[in-house]
Image 1 (tube, one colour):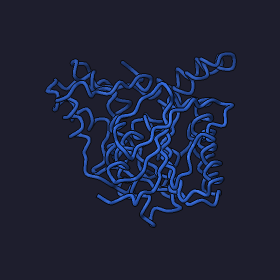
Image 2: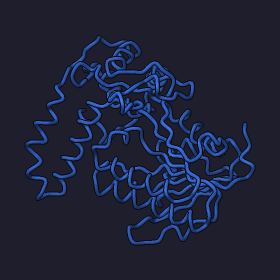
Image 3: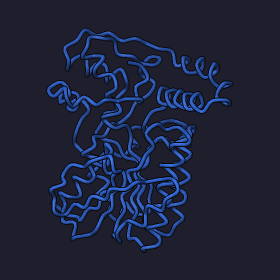
Length: 324
């Protein structure tokens, strides 16, 4: 393994899907890791001598960064859970801005940010919040790396239980309009940590996907039916479902924060039903799998097989599921 040379790395969002993998990769490479967790959360690897868990109450009015030690590198895996505007502004923008202010104060060596490839075509509140912070980081004068991953394995697992239970796989339209190069949390963590020592990754925004070929929703369905040995049943839903729902709810959203959040979730659903998670060629006005950098070895098919063999690992997608 490549030694961390005892550099001190702070990981924000350390209990998240990617954050946990980043912590594990850093520990494996012998970095000294400071992992920020909320007080109600716990982190694995607590017996590792080079891991320091910082348990914080991160409030909107508290200067929580005063409790942080001086470190060399920050890796921020912070991301809003819901994607709603108030959540995104707080987590994706404000909390990251707090970290950036702290980084400038201690003259940090390198700030690595986990962002998302979907900010290439921003239409949503959380995308705008991410872009606001990205601009702030790029103009800060600090060395930075902004990682823009395609779809995660976990994000393509919302219908695993449906197939396991013999239900149909739901797709929007033909199921072939969108595609991605899904990347595993382990491969993405390796890519993120590689940014520390790779000068080619410095002061750049870095789109990255897993190994090809690109996968459509229909491809996902085919994999799952085969892996779980279930009859092929696919239900096609018109993307106009979102338009009808938005027309009904939008006027009411001015009077209710709860409805406003539902409207934003519908917009998110519509976006992912219509847009691919690949490099976007603005000149050609098209997504291009061939121009999307690929990294890693793990395939979505193998991941689905692991969920069949170890069903306890099937992720609970919670509010990310559009349909149950």
